[in-house]
Image (cartoon, rainbow, N blue to C red; front, side):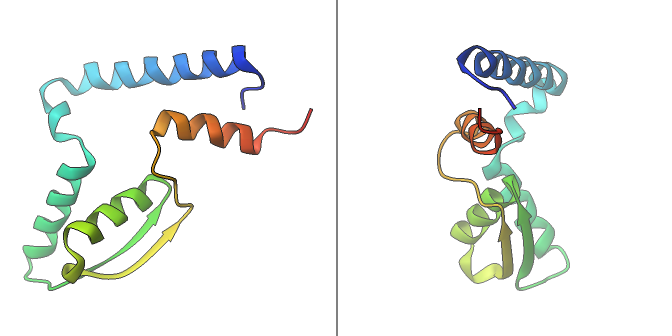
Length: 106
């Protein structure tokens, strides 16, 4: 976990570089890789075998996905367990807050 402003900047730079590498590798399909698109895909999978609802176990980012599914289709959402819910802020901010929260006291 980063400790201090310089370590945080280095960590965020690492995360940005990783995101840029992923974006370069994804190429043209990057526009399809979003929470909203995943919610639509998940609903299409639910509908294929004519299921009225689906259940969901969401952990970490899966909690945001679960909340988005329930918001888009509340009557098609069955049981849901959301574990380790992240807040509504940007994910890079979440990484910084999480690292501060889990860092050993100095």
